[in-house]
Length: 97
Image (cartoon, rainbow, N blue to C red):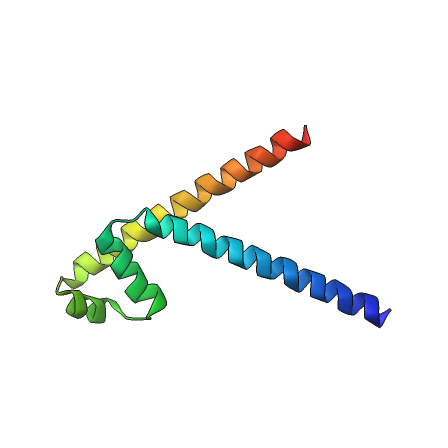
């Protein structure tokens, strides 16, 4: 019983890892859709953990511009992911029929 439970946990972990990797790929595709400025702001904020003031100083732009770029970037990424999810679900429904 313990071995079966352990194997089930390994399978779930593997499936989770695959899902995380696929999600990262989708997010990276979404990031590629952003303008160059939005990409930089997104990377500095989400990957380097910089705040608006730090990003503004590094890029020599205003704090409000940073905020606007990040807001637009997040909106674009969300829309991309929603479209991708909708397309994926539609494909599954089509294949099940």
